[in-house]
Length: 135
Image (tube, rainbow, N blue to C red; front, top):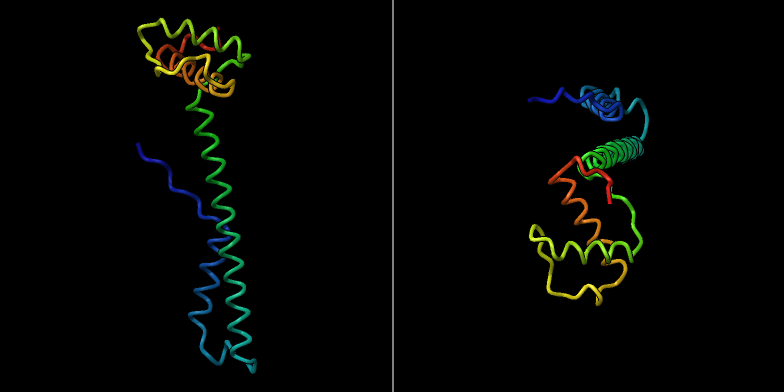
């Protein structure tokens, strides 16, 4: 399966057009009685601004794509209190489908318990998507 060609970013197109126009001009056309160093500095400044803006836009698009991919790949997991999560993990410890580290659940912080609970729930949902948000 191939993806459709990406539409070029307007900033990239502007940068390419500006660069092509500058490379095709003669020295006399570019200078037109102006200081060459001043023109060079202004041109470089414009190019740098265009590059920065194009980079920002690409980064924003990448972030949106990443968030969309995360939303698709990570099924929703119902929130639980630390006590509910602890009880769930204690029951899961007796399930032969899952193995847990030797560390005692009572030694774990609430954050660790909730993190492990969410991981286990995601694993269950991936194994059986029909479970959804059941507890």
